[in-house]
Length: 121
Image (cartoon, rainbow, N blue to C red; front, side):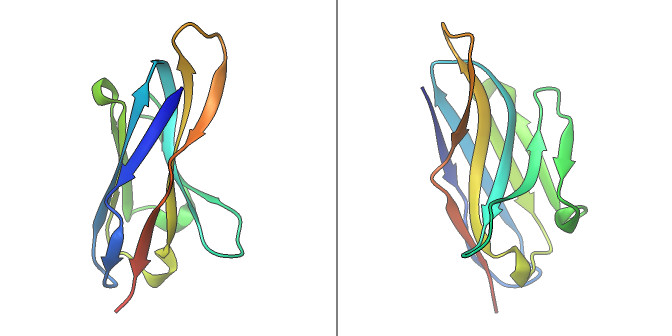
């Protein structure tokens, strides 16, 4: 199986920055894409950004120009650099990966445990 471990959340003032990291571990044969979702109470989980193994990226409109997703394929790690943070970015951020484990032909979706990001003065 695949485990995703996130780090980097916390409290930041409006206009500040945070960097989230997510490392995937386990018997990984291939992992593609990786990404970040976020969720606030009473709302559905929302895609924030995804990145493929060839570094093709996709962002939700509300974070374009402020957030940057990147990945280190050798380390199976994905990052989310968040700049110019707004109170509306407050949410639990979840790491996501679609992966194929060694010895299997199947691809499955995996999620991290979530990390809280709070933007407040």
